[in-house]
Length: 114
Image 1 (cartoon, helix red, strand yellow):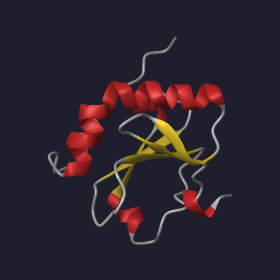
Image 2 (cartoon, one colour):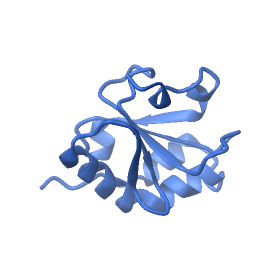
Image 3 (cartoon, helix red, strand yellow):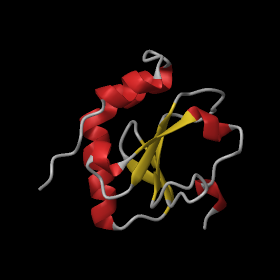
Image 4 (spheres, one colour):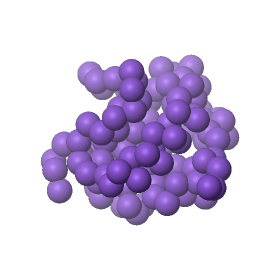
């Protein structure tokens, strides 16, 4: 696994997992507050609930794009659709405009099944 897809131990407490039943995705995505990050807003993708098993890091702006790791073309398309649906909430949580994790999770929209 690419070390760029792993997170630092201190960062794991700033990340929130969004499970498939909340996102509509077939995998877990992680959103976070900016905290001490020196990069722009990102979403991490994990095949399961273990924090150190990220397979990809995806940018949120200016475009949704793969930054590190690997995702199949269909999975990246799903992440892109989900981020586009939830961009405002993800960015507001990143910026600290949404203060509480439960509020961020409640504001996220589930990707409709196709």
